[in-house]
Image (cartoon, rainbow, N blue to C red; front, side):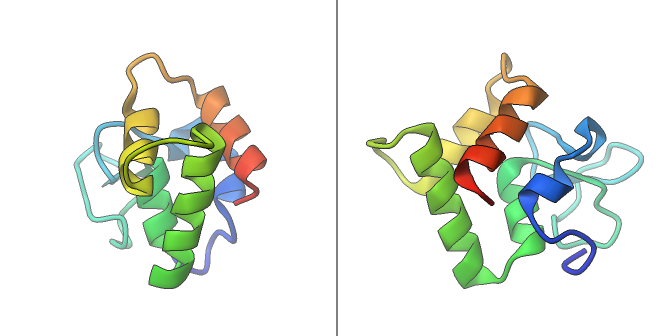
Length: 103
């Protein structure tokens, strides 16, 4: 997984690669670890975890959180997870966010 996509923008070109409520899912819709080779769709955090090493992951999550709430309180991960998992969230908003955050 770490070599297939270069960015979250590239990963989330297709709505089929996005999920909510879990870090990642396999082709059968079962929850899997985002680093699992069977993972085919991801939440924002799971996608970042799958694509980047720890240092880059922290940077990406910070950029996403700042794009969501420039003066937001709470950890970057919490802000990103709540944003991703909002039941009213649309995939187009996820695409806009990753473009805005340039990740």
